[in-house]
Image (tube, rainbow, N blue to C red; front, side):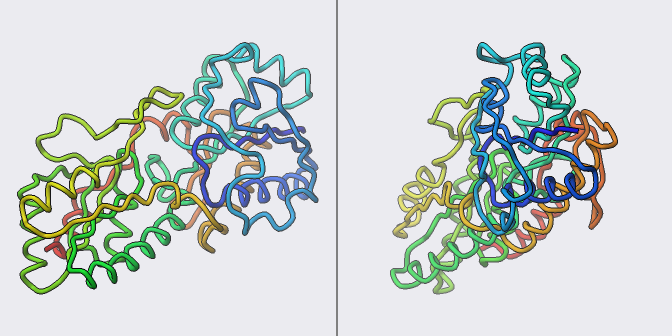
Amino acid sequence: MKIGILTSGGDCPGLNAVIRGAVLRGVISHEAEFVGFRWGWRGVVEGDIVPLPRQEVRGLSRQGGTILHSSRTNPFEGDGGGPENIQRMLDANGIDAIIAIGGEGTLTAARRLVDEGGIKVVGVPKTIDNDLASTDYSFGFDTAVEIATEAIDRLRTTADSHGRCMIVEVMGRHVGWIALHSGMAGGAHAILVPEQPQSIEQICEWVESVRDRGRAPVIVVAEGFRLSDMESEHSHKGLDAFNRPRLGGIAEILAPMIEERTGIESRATVLGHIQRGGAPSAYDRVLATRLGMAAVDAVHDEAWGEMVTLRGTDIARVSIREATGALNVVPPSRYDEAAVLFG
């Protein structure tokens, strides 16, 4: 069997570990042959293929980024897009199946290719945001939280030195998992997540409470957070290839509002893509490797349209439709647990 692997959407620590786990498992256990599609779905649409022999994946688990590169290409667009064109490309290159490693947009596209064209695809969940339903955690999330936590620790020292309020914006799109975990780990005085809109008055009350105790306030905000009087998330960067808004910049809106209302000098720091970069944590290396191995087993079992997933400590399978049907949001109980520590 000849299997094509792609990495699509935003890059993520652990992608190379998935590739390595898949290739080693496939070669050793199933005598499979592997190729990679360069630049995600764009490589599928354009037939940009590179061989992936065993020697190409040696030592990859500790390496950040993706050796196959990535993009946010929609596989239903372009001259070579759509299930019929993609199937012709697969047949011409003798490729039997695709392992698609990606997040919500990537896996939604994969599901459509399976449903509308019968393309043989197995999915692997990839997102630092941890926003995919049907998996307890996705690889990349742990590394992103570690990076954000370190940044919060560093910003706290400069906040204390100047008596400033620091607003730290982290990624997460429409969910607040990175904000919740890094905020709790970094001892933030307030955590603002998309699932729980707050008023500027409440935020300022927390900030003033911290100041009155002689501390410098540190607030962690997810990029998808909105104030209670905002109709939607802040987005000024247009749409991505899947027509989703590019979020970011809410911290730069909050900082002057807080300073004006409290008189506390406030600064915004947007961590942005630094959360995606660098080597994956040990946890993410292990999880990514296990998911890659399980994806090849799913291909061997012809489990088309399914996604490998983490359930507790076990690797399982679910339908991609189930995984992309809803977001994995922060439940109220988890937010209430953290909110005890605010102010």
